[in-house]
Length: 117
Image 1 (cartoon, rainbow, N blue to C red):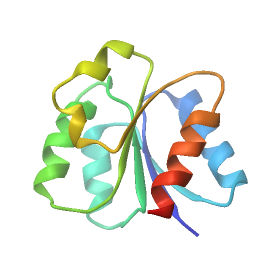
Image 2 (image 1 turned 135 degrees about the vertical axis):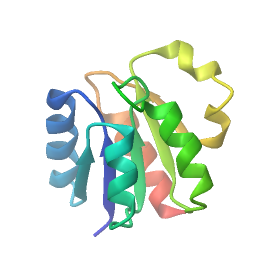
Image 3 (image 1 turned 90 degrees about the vertical axis):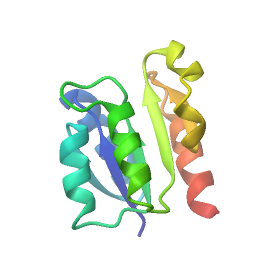
C-alpha cells in the first residue's frame, strides 16, 4: 500500500482527498502547514506528496525549498486553485502541477502515474 502525504490548509479539501485516496487503497497522512509536513517527514516516509501552495505560515513554496535540501527522492504533485503559479520558477522542481477542481480524475491519474515510475 502506497502512502500519500497530503499538505493542505483547507479541512474540507483534506477530508475529500483522504476519502478519495483511501477508497483507492492508499494510506493518507495529512498536514495543514508546510512546517507540519516537514515535521511528519522526520518520522514518515511517504511514497508521494500532494502539496497546496497557498497556506498560512510556511506555504508550499517554502516547503519545497526546505524539502529540496533534505535530498529525499519523493515525487511532489502541486495541487492548487491558482493557475498563475504554473509559471513559478520553483515549480520545475516538482513532478506535476494539477489545478484543483471538483473532478479528482486528473489528480488521481497523476498520482498513479508517478507511483508507477
